[in-house]
Amino acid sequence: MDTLTRPADEDRPDVEPEPSDATFPESGSVSRRALLRAAGGGLVAVGVAACAPVAVSRPTWTYPPGSSSGPALSAAPSGSAAAPSPSASAAPSTAAESPAMSHEPSASPSASAPAMDHDANALAVVERFLGGEGASMANPGNVPFEPKIVDGVKVFDMTIEEIQHQIDAKKDPIAGLGFNGTWPGPRLTVVEGDRVRAIFKNNMHESTGVHFHGQRIPNNMDGVPHITQDPIEPGDSFTYEFTAKTTGSHMYHSHHNATDQVGRGLLGAFIVEPKDPAQRYDKLYGATQDIIWISNDALGGFTINGRGFPATSPIVATLGETIVIRFMNEGNMTHPWHLHGMPMRVVARDGYPLGSAAFTCDTLGVNPGERWDVVIRCEEPGAWAFHCHILQHAEGQDGMFGMVTALVVQEATATTSQAPVAAAARAAGSTAFACTIPQLT
Ligand SMILES: [Cu+2]
View 1 (cartoon, rainbow, N blue to C red):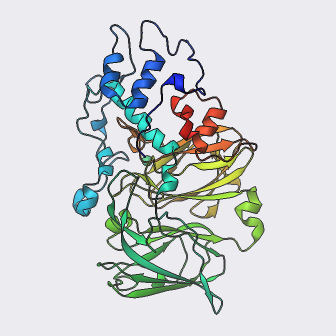
View 2 (view 1 turned 60 degrees about the vertical axis):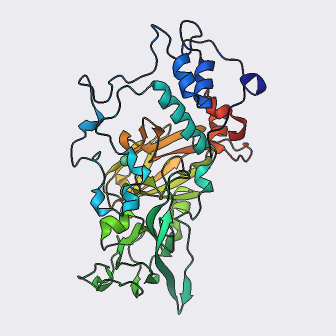
View 3 (view 1 turned 45 degrees about the horizontal axis):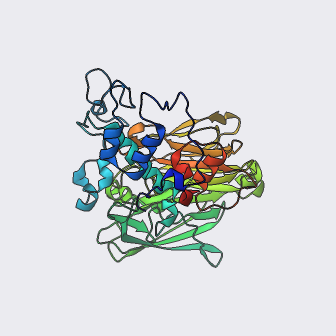
């Protein structure tokens, strides 16, 4: 979606008169109206000229990146969580050249970038998020996949495909890989004690192997090529068969050339529900939504379920609703997920219930390979940011990107909206211009 052309204020009866408050003084400074007009219209040149009054402080960097007076983006230590992704040599050329990678910490970001550039770009990308870009993307991952039942065995017929995958609606497609053609692959759900048969047909031009991460299974079903099986050659199939023993949140992923293959999308969720229905999250916590977030940080950039902001999907809940999120990290870095406005109750790690060790937090670090399940009581109405708090994974000079989305908590009386984020924010008293755009509310 292109940046919307904003009508003049006088043509928009829904816009209330501008407050003249301390936050946006009308005299001696750029007016809020002028700021919004410049930003909303993308009129960067005009905005810069209009928004550079003499002797008026304007929003800018406290420590210009690269300056000696403060922290610089280029100061990220090698090998830290904020270090760049794996070397481009491991990436296919299309992925290595993906614009997504432009969000990596820059060695020399411009210290003189006008503040208005950031505001206009930040607004433009938020407009795309509010407009529902995530829901508009083709081939979503994490879609539940029903098995066939053959002689009491739950059979999943899977393929491994080379796909063209878009991280968001504007970036060029990258050379991804997908189970059943999606990144992440479909959500596979079974019940404790089920006999499971997963048949993977390799339609790629390279060999592979599939590991069920977190399951206690026979060793020869472990999916590690050259150790427990030979690689699955192009055109061949391999059948993984086991009894689902380990309940909770698990994953399946490539275990062959994995930096590249997992980094390009060969990952998915494998959920083993407890045999006792009383131990499932809907009964145990009254959860009415069971959400999976698989993060990655490799060859498609920083993603949640294969998409980067603004193409990430907001969670939409009703005031008073209880939801579960299962964080899964298929990337190479830790990601501290931070929810604004409400705490998270952490109830399981790697599928194992924490019991009396359950704890409450608002920021939860999830290391590579880990799964953490959290329960959220949606008690505060509004549109709450929900993002990785390594800031280089979430926001830069072009605005927010990557590992950012929102938890929308709307009143039970709210009407169905095509733009729930803006509607909830506005209902909660947002003063953001973007939440007044008629097409987005
Ligand atoms: Cu992160």
